[in-house]
Length: 307
Ligand SMILES: [Zn+2]
Image 1 (cartoon, rainbow, N blue to C red):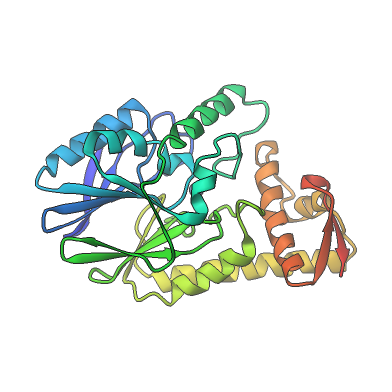
Image 2: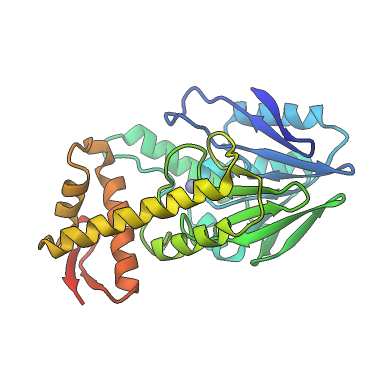
């Protein structure tokens, strides 16, 4: 565990999770000024994470925690929220379009794609979702809402894509943009197909994020990014290239999701098939939104018809 100072007003509460299989556990940050503070995301709700985060807060005992602001509902960011709220009295803040997803733990919404045969892990994920759903928001905000922390401000930017009510948080006084899971420190974010995610909205959100006057991008997973605009532009281009690849395969006569997934990811590990299918479906939904194709059927069996 480590407290890492990102700016004089922003600290990362980093907790290592041995059981977490991905390389980058969820990030949790404290923004503080003038004796007040907010957390950006809450991380996992396991006892060890909770204990360590409370130790961090105790080390910042001059700070009165006002809010726990969630970038989105996925359980790796939200399942710790209720316990932290009970311990500190801070209020939970979420975007209005995200509330129903947080409060519907039975839905799988692209938080993590756990293969059908990994029963233990799937059971665990369900428990996380149920824990996350206890974090009933005290305040549901809309785009451009501003939260004051002492003398600095946290601006809520509705940036849907990874989820429907995803928020980025911008602190203009520090020129810092918290990007949630829309932009990660390393790699590309997973964008689930509608209704929980949207590639159409995601690309629009990236364009909006690129216009923010930020010197530092602070992601939901992985290290901070020093050239936010360049990183965001790379992701925009990555999506454009992927879309062009799919359009090319459709022009060559491929007309179902399975064969497109095979062509784009020829060496795919079977555990990643459903995640890859979700990514391709998201791109196809974007093409459908633009009137370029029509989709028939569901999931991997979706057929693509030229519009
Ligand atoms: Zn997420």
